[in-house]
Image 1: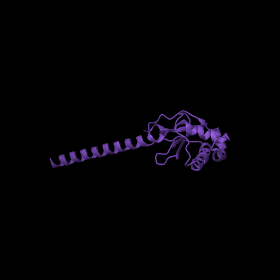
Image 2: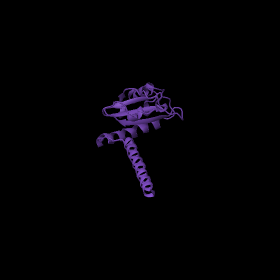
Image 3: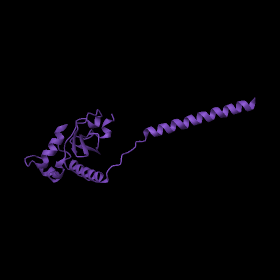
Image 4: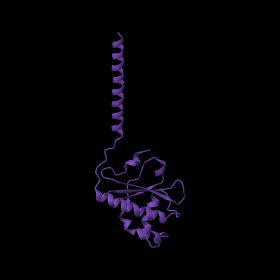
Length: 156
């Protein structure tokens, strides 16, 4: 009788451990995001343009560009309009003038509140006012293919 209960206990313990391992495996597989292969040329261009946008935002720090779509309009106008007060700073970045307004971000996340976005083919850039400093802006970017928005915009 003792062997019966020991055998039954081992069988139950084995079952519990196997269920635990199965649930752990399933859980790990749910969080694994299968990344798509991104064209290396697109990635290089994205990184170069991200650096340029970051330099632009650093140079423009302390100057109000407004909020929402007005941020991008002021940046784009500053690239080419000599009457724009920011022309002396932004004209150095006129090669970024090929970016146009894209689909607005409807994310409810506080980081994207009052933001604007620019798109050039497959590269989406989101510029939003900083939550910590006034007249300072943050940059978010991604490569888009099928979806016209970045994957992180869906996270609230």
